[in-house]
Image 1 (cartoon, rainbow, N blue to C red):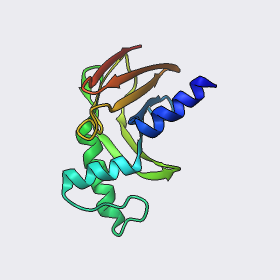
Image 2 (spheres, rainbow, N blue to C red):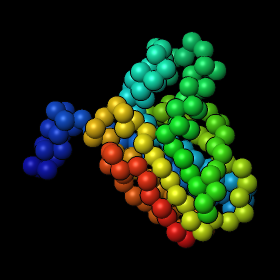
Image 3 (cartoon, rainbow, N blue to C red):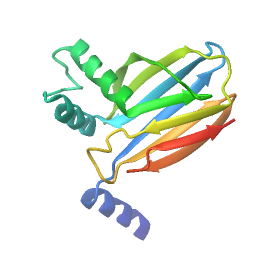
Image 4 (spheres, rainbow, N blue to C red):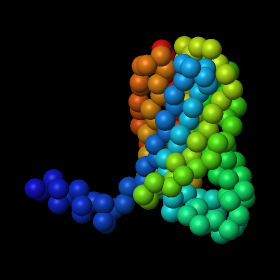
Length: 158
């Protein structure tokens, strides 16, 4: 019971800031599929600050503009290399799920992957206590890590 009370107390008086990035090498399409989950209110604040505009992700006035800003922001804060080759990520869109935005990307075709190098500093400029969780799956092997601001890079070998 004490742990539950402490959990709620910490969340009420000391909010935590977490994003989740899923990187998956799809065996059928031979592409790397990426999904990034961020709390939409923190994400809107980051977009507003970076692009000096007022963004509403839930009810965008101009969906194309919001898509463009989301794509640009994520691509500038998330870089992925497969076997030392930088992947070009194509933005596919986003959707809202509860209090978070899921943003989707896909790479060009890549036959196989032995090593992934990932740099992720999403929302680091917003919160000193930002944590970015990364889950990467290649050939059915899932590897995960946590990057605490300012730590921004990880390498996975398969």
